[in-house]
Structures are given as structure tokens and as C-alpha cells.
Image 1 (cartoon, rainbow over the protein chains, first blue to last red):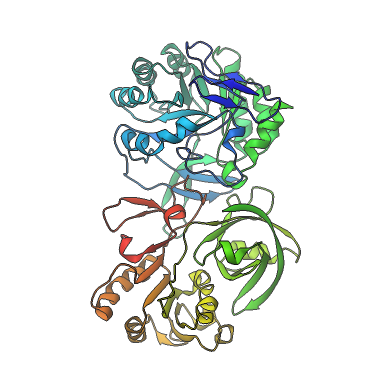
Image 2 (tube, rainbow over the protein chains, first blue to last red; image 1 turned 30 degrees about the horizontal axis):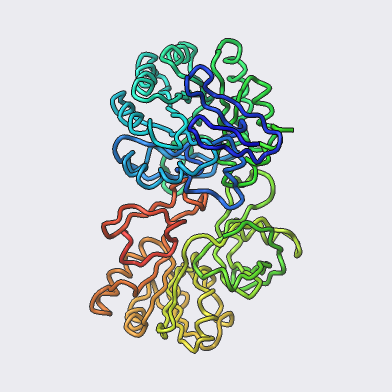
Length: 289
Length: 258
């Protein structure tokens, strides 16, 4: 099956029978994927960190690692194992948008899978600057932004970030929400023009490092997230009208089926793809059966 | 690099650890010492991540992995599997040690916990009529590799923290002599060992020149393909940060900021 992606690339869907899905039906460009399976932000870096056995051409797309306006190198990322998964303290570590484009734009242009750029930043001006640079880049089909959450969440600030991206770039915008995002925050993001919601950012987890006795804070990844994400997805599906993308927890094809049954339009596979590089392809195959 | 179902062939005890032999087609042609493999320990999600393993022996169609099951979860898992079991291995990954024909006197320096990555250098170098000196530091005598495990031609020098074998504490005078003798040093150990070596080499060699010391970066390899960034190492030159799993894990010591 061959179909035309929103970026103009020809998307070859090598998974027989996979159903194309548009994650931005309300956007004039749309965000058409050859099938509803993506890789979550940073799982293949910028498309340059692909485990042997992982075939990106089998997938609807991938979300890049974070891209900021300027290089962000404050604290090197780290991974530790915890019961049931890992904590990944990634942060927005990256060399800045200019360098990312210099090193990876050619790969994105050639990609059969749709490329969604994960734009990071706390300041609407920074978001706008990055989005504006990415707008006309061949191969970039959409943008994904993390919506700030936590106890100090601010719907107005979240809306400003989404709005900044929408204003600066004529690309569909996916808003990745905290798992516990209150409805007011969701509503603000939708009002600002998010074309789809990604449920959810890796929830924060803490572990105490044995040797150093330090608290380690990172995003939690593991199969235990499936029921949490599915529950939130089900709640939002009752009143949200834009497509919902489930992110996190997929460790076997049945998890993805659970998400679609709960109201998801697509799924993002995350760190499980490092351990089992053939999993995303099997998920795509399962969703096409 | 490939992902492959390997087969566990057999295992035997070697010192405190075990040597586990596996089948890997054309290993000798495609794999270099210092490159690594990622082993999935079972089909479930505990443990979650693959484990990195450095071949301690590379044969025509086989890889041997050595380690102490008490210290190394991957070796412990391997030992629990019966001979003939299929293994889910990805590799070889990264860039390993490079020993050129002009390198005749090879000094291997390791802390016992990281020794495995160096052992695969011994056999091929001796086969090329080169000389090998193995300098090993360990907490105690029981952590050292038994001398019988090494070919007789290998010069074996040890130090233990408790003084139960070899020099007490760190290798010092013998290492200085070794550094003066060698024309290539391959090292695997902690950041502290790398720092010490960086201080000793200029004393022994009138400076640390590019190409003299190849160091296995003291980092953990989580995803192994450059995505997680947990193996970032800072360059000691002007080249910023590198993902050890892609650019390394073996670097010229001059290139590492320690």
C-alpha cells in the first residue's frame, strides 16, 4: 500500500492491510500516517538511533528527541532500572535546532515514516522560533509539545505554548499531556488549537540510588502504565473531539489494541522498542489484522 | 551489526567467574575486542533492559563471555540456562580496540570487574608473535584471574587493595615499567583508573600522545543504540559530547574528559 503523507513524502506501508490514520483532520495539511503506530519522542533519537531489527518503514511515524532553540546541556541523561521498568531522566538535552537540522534533516527528508518533531521549551518565543525553523523542512509532518504539568500547572501558560507553535508554523501540533492533567488544562490546550492529544508524558518516578544515597527522578517507562494510560484515554474519549494518541506502556500488541478500544486513534511505542526492536512492527501488524 | 538468535554452547569456571561460549556465525570476521553485545535475559520484562556483554574470546563462529555471576546479572542469567538454549543477542555494537601490525608490545590494564573486554585481545596478539603484559587490579586475591587461565607467554602483574596478592593498593612501579615498555596500552576500568593512567603515562613516556592509550569508557550502556544518552562522555578535546555506544565505547584516552 502506498499513500501520500502530509509532508508530501510517499509513505510506503509495508504492513499489509494497515489502516492509514489522520491525526490532524482539522488541520489543512492533515497528518496522515500509513498506520497508527509511532515511536515515542526520542526512542530512535532523531531517526539516527535505530536498533537492528527495528524497521521504521513498517511504522506510521516517529517522534524525534527534543529540540530546543539553543543547545541544552545542563545535566547528562541517565537511565536506571526499577521494578517493572526504568526511570529515564532525559531532559531536553540536545544541540539546538540549527545543529539538529544540519545533522538530521536529510534523514527526515528520506524517511518513509512520518517525522514529528518534538519541540521543547518553557518560553513561547523559544517554541515559536523552533517551530518556525522546522515549518518548511521537507519531511517534517508535525510538531509535538510537552504541556507543563504538576502541581503548579498553568492552563494559560500551556495554551501560550501551543498557540506559539500554531502561530509560527503551519504544521499540525500534538500536545503531550501529563498523565494527571486536569480537564481545565486539557481544555486550555484544545482551545489554543492542538490538533491531537498525546496521552501521556512519562509520569515522574523516584528511586534512591543505593551507592550514592541520592534521589533519582526520571520519567517512568514500563508495562505497568498500560492500565493508567487506558483509563485516562477512556475518560478523555468521552468528551474530546480531536484524535487521541496513546503513549507509553505498550510492551505487546495486546496493549495497543487496549488503547484503540479505549478511544485512541494511534499509539506510540516507547522504551520497549530498545529491548524488543521487532515489537513496533508486530504491533503494526496486529492492528492491521 | 545484527540481531540474531545465538545459541549457548557450554560454560566452564575460570577463577571466580565463568566463561560462557555461544555460537555466532562469522564472529571472528565481524567482531573486534571492545565491541559489545546486548543480551535479552528472557522474554519478559524483568530485568527490563538488555545487558551489555563484552566478548572475552572471539572464535571463527563463536563468542565467549566471561564474568562473575555474583557481580554480573547477565552472566548469572546465562549460567541458569541449559546448554543449547537460544539467546537473543544484538551486536556487535560500537567501536572496539584497534591493534595494528606495528604494535608489538601490548599492555592490558584493567580492574577485575572490567577485565572481560580485554581478554579477547590476548590470543590474536600472541598469534601475531606480539608480546602481552596484563596488569590487573582487584579488591582481593579471590577477584583476580587465575594465572593458569592465561597463556604462559603473557606477563601477568597484579595488585590487590588488601595486599593479599601482588602489590598492595594500586599498581605503581611495575606499571611505570610496563608503560615504558609498551607501544600500545588498552585499558578497561573506572574513571579513577583512567585519571591515574593519564598522570602516569606522561611520567613514563615523556607525554601522552594520541594513539598510545585506548580506553574503554567507564559508562553504562542502557539502550546501546544511541537513543537514551545515558552513555554520554565528554570529549577532552573540542568535540563536545559523544555517545559511547556509537562513537566508542573505546576511545583514545586523549579524547576523554575525566
